[in-house]
Length: 139
Image (cartoon, rainbow, N blue to C red; front, side):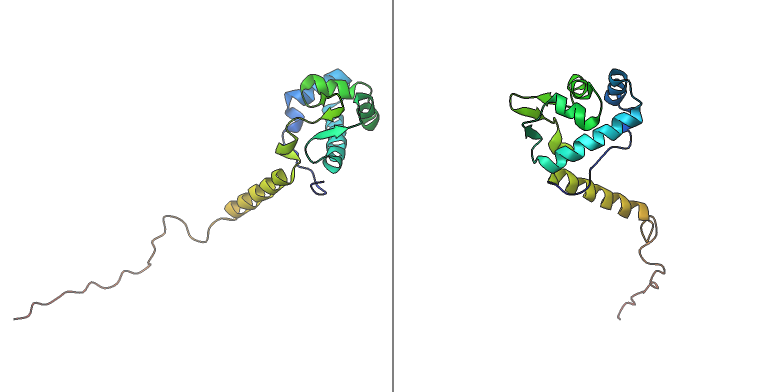
């Protein structure tokens, strides 16, 4: 259980796998993404490593309220049937605690960079140069 939020890409609706899921399930891409969110949220709450025992593709269909959704996820490579249950490939990249920490860090860095720096890199360090001093020779 890695927290109460889920990391999702901005371009998920354009992902070829989502388009393929929509075709296989006769759904619009937005509906596919909503069902993915429901499934991934469930997996985030009930798995630490992407492995879930005791569930099968029929259960995924019931959760998604769409016949064939689990099989379609297997076809696009986003779900794997194991002998004991299901496995979510690349789970650690998106749903683990470290993935969420990385995402938060990335957002923090982007926010800082977008805020702009106080000085521009080409601004001189000192505004007024010190007056030039001359040494006089001793005689």
